[in-house]
Structures are given as structure tokens and as C-alpha cells.
Image 1 (spheres, rainbow, N blue to C red):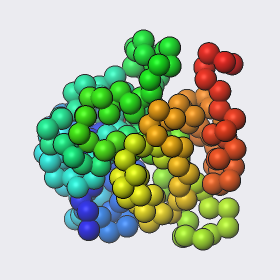
Image 2 (cartoon, rainbow, N blue to C red; image 1 turned 90 degrees about the vertical axis):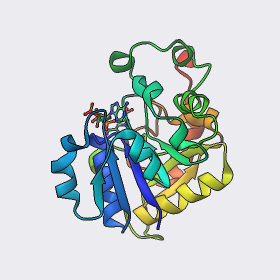
Image 3 (tube, helix red, strand yellow; image 1 turned 120 degrees about the horizontal axis):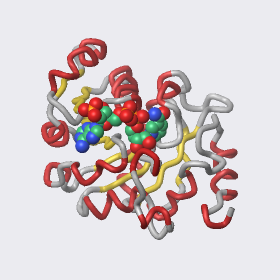
Length: 215
Ligand SMILES: NC(=O)c1ccc[n+]([C@@H]2O[C@H](COP(=O)([O-])OP(=O)(O)OC[C@H]3O[C@@H](n4cnc5c(N)ncnc54)[C@H](OP(=O)(O)O)[C@@H]3O)[C@@H](O)[C@H]2O)c1
């Protein structure tokens, strides 16, 4: 079974770690500080979890999740993530991240920035539009009526297929928004960002999304 590495152990990172452990995965969690700062979280997660530095979590993970304030993406270790599937949960909040011109003018997307920074990694956008607490409450078995769906986007079909399987294991349907450049359709303030939606509803939300400049 794949080991899941987490860069970021805050609201989303810790909940994704919980979800992964609940589904039998080993996880390696990290934050911007020393692993000892994650002792309480690791104790809570149990024997399938350990803490490491961000570099070691990136090395250990077969699949690695980057779930940090977006502005910090240039500190993510590059070499240990080469060739790996990297799940990107990040969103752009100028009040937290400062202004990033290419995102303000929508000439790129958050995940394309990370992809450019990690050129040989296979970035898949996922888990960016669900509240952290709902990750462990909203999952349902495959085939459940009105099952919640989550959007993915990515440029590598095989990596996306792996993440779709992971989402299904974790209790969610997946809706493929297309390549990373289409990730804006699920960015902050779009219709699908936040609410509990089925796959059909989420497809409608993606189609109805408007660029910031067109509102
Ligand atoms: N909260 C939500 O419900 C939610 C939902 C979907 C998506 N998101 C997005 O997901 C990302 C994470 O959100 P969050 O709410 O989980 O944030 P958070 O609670 O503030 O946690 C951020 C985590 O990232 C760590 N971190 C910061 N820089 C790092 C680095 N360079 N390397 C490794 N770890 C680093 C922090 O470690 P330290 O404690 O050491 O600083 C902390 O563990 C954000 O981009 C956010 O917009 C959030």
C-alpha cells in the first residue's frame, strides 16, 4: 500500500492524515518546523503515523500532499518529489498569501504555479474545496445515493486515475475538471467551492464558474 507523505499538518493536512490512516495507509506528516512539534498529532493518529521533516516526508511518500499556505510553495523540496504524484490542496487568499500577480490577473492557476516549481512531479489538484472537518465526516461507500463528489484537475492521466481511486477509497466521487489550467473553475468564490455537492451538481458548478474579471 502506498505511503502518503504530507507537507503541512494544519487543518487539512491533519484531517487528510486521519482519513488516510482510517483507510489503512501509513502516513508521514511534516510541517515547517521540527518533527517533535507534531508529537501530539502523531499520538492521536496512532501507529500508522510518524512525523518527519518536510524533506523526509517528501522522500518517504509514494504520494505526497502539499497542503500549506500557498505563499510558501517555493520552500517545498523539489528533488525528493521528482516523478511523484503530488496532490495540491492549496488555494490563493491574497490577505494571507500577499498578492501574486499571475493569480491576480488569472494568467495561471495555483496548481500550474506548483507544477512549474516541481517540473517533473505529477501535480493533481484535489481536496481544495472541502472544509477540513468534512473530510472525515462526509465520505460514503461507493455507489451511495447522493454521494459527495470532489473535483480533481491534472495534466497526467495516470496520476489523475490514481487520485480518483484514492478519493473513492476515502468515500468521495471524483469530477475531472480537465488539465491543471482548468483548476480556476473550483477556485475561491466559484459555485462549487465549499458546498456539499454530488458529481452531477459539481459538473454544473464547474460549467457555471466565472473568472474573477468576468463577474
Ligand atoms: N482549512 C480548510 O478547510 C481548507 C480547505 C481546502 C483547502 N485549504 C487550503 O489548503 C492549504 C492548507 O490549509 P490549512 O487550513 O490546512 O492551513 P493551516 O491550518 O494554516 O496549516 C498549514 C500547515 O502548513 C505547514 N507549513 C507551512 N509552510 C510549510 C512548509 N514550507 N513546509 C511544510 N509545511 C509547511 C504549517 O506548519 P507550521 O505549523 O510549522 O507553520 C501547517 O502545518 C491552504 O492553501 C488552504 O487554502 C484549506
